[in-house]
Image (cartoon, rainbow, N blue to C red; front, side, top):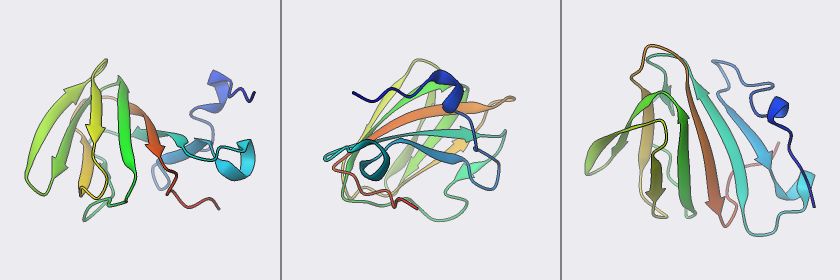
Amino acid sequence: MKVVKKEQFCAAVSESCPLKLLISGREHGAKNCQVGMAVLKPGQRLPASGYSWHASEEVSYILAGKIRVDTDTGSEIVEEGDLVFMPGNKPHASTNISQGEAKILWFVTPHTVPEN
């Protein structure tokens, strides 16, 4: 068992690096999934340009804020308490459209996020 305490969720997250990997293969021994946190400032987009695109399926839970999720086929507004499923190989981006910070807890399987 590995536990990530809530104090670690937003540690080391900054405007220039809004993502933090919380559960990983290297650090936690996860073989088939990764869990991370994104903290976006008002107006901030992730990625800054273009789309994220990976083979993994992704589930995101909106912890705070209001976010516009864009894909190559449209967009949807999601907010605190909403859950988003993104199929693998689907281009997507998220923009914080709220007045305060937006926080997203995301899960991918299998793991495809590079571990530094």
